[in-house]
Image (cartoon, rainbow, N blue to C red):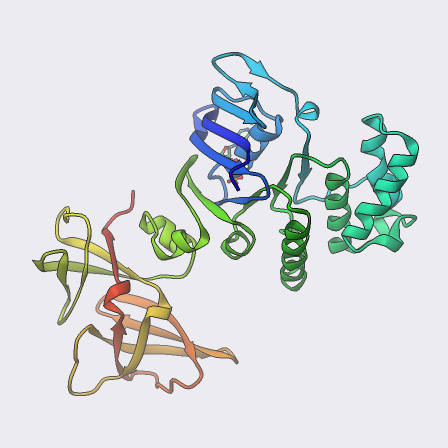
Length: 363
Ligand code: ADP
């Protein structure tokens, strides 16, 4: 996958005093899916709109297939319709007064495709998204999921170099979203599509993308495979955004190489801490799947921390426990087999390899 399609370098865009996109750089190779993932307002859509040519950057450069399409310093700006990109937004933006077929044909007519070719393309892409029978329907007679597939078919029809998808599944209900996610992944694999995918949903990003760029306040905080950002997060922000995490304020005790004693009064555990501690008050973070809880017994062996069950909520396939450790309340899901009671004293046992420590404040 070394065939570079998109190169984004030091991209910059502000709105008034808001730095919407701040020194953003990444590459996209042919057939690759890159997700821009982050909370609302972190600059994902603006980055996508800059790539699309719907916004002009104040700094940096964008190349598509090696050709500069935007450069602030060289004053290059190629307009959106000349970039050969396919766009799909959260609002399907299909034309309600047209049939499904016409929705797809219309952009091709504008681009001057021959009539016979248009007919062929409309049929081909409708079949691709599983709407082969729907060409003559009015677009408004379709369900939300079907309308979104029309929007996708329309973007695919003129064979764009890159498909730019901005929260394409956000308007669908949870079940349909999960279904569409699978369909989109299958279609992407089959066609080898190159996709830049904007989402705030970590499951969507992790399951669809080959690489994920986690964004925060206009910057990319980490860019890596789903495995890398989940297993080796670069910051507490990344760790907590790409999955669930239990956190506790702790005190770093004595060290033996990079293994520190971590005090969670009255207990202590040992774990790796890579950077030299900046003060000894830090934040411990661990994923729930790396913790087990069990009833308190006499011996608190290694890497156990005492807590108490404050509440428990039966959720059918699992139980949600509200635990208290010192001053901190933790929410912890576990299987139905773990039978603990309200008020019971417990031990949280942590996998020492998986304990992370971060600065107490992540700002
Ligand atoms: P995201 O897609 O991650 O939700 P956006 O790229 O839409 O974030 O927005 C990034 C920041 O830029 C936000 O603070 C947002 O309010 C601001 N912003 C985006 N578009 C505009 C605009 N047209 N005018 C003013 N501010 C904007």
